[in-house]
Length: 138
Image (spheres, rainbow, N blue to C red):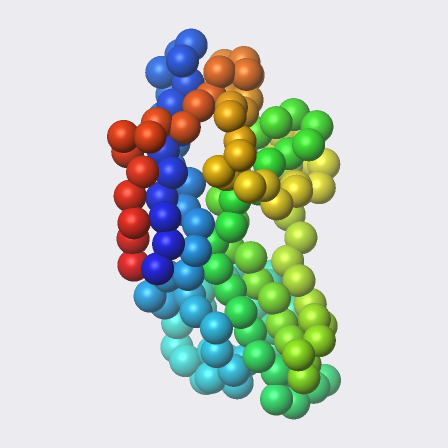
């Protein structure tokens, strides 16, 4: 279960939706269970990393969910599927993401405190949350 936030640019009218939370398919599970299933839910490079970790370690647990990131350099928002692999409760692997515009490392953001962001179309700091279009999803 999660939330979907809609952002709209006051200047150019561009609108985008950002998901946050766990979905029906993307949920915490043993890594072996994920690898045995036919569905490949993650990026192919992430999937390869998971297969490599499974070869090196046993009894791993994978937790994945949608999280919202912001580029600290250019201020653009992204929603990404964050994948974390645990070995006996310790983090063994965590996803890292980069901005497609400037290649800076993305930082996890608190969407509830974020007043505005940079519009990916017009590049102005006029990208704001539209409270009327916030929805719960599962």
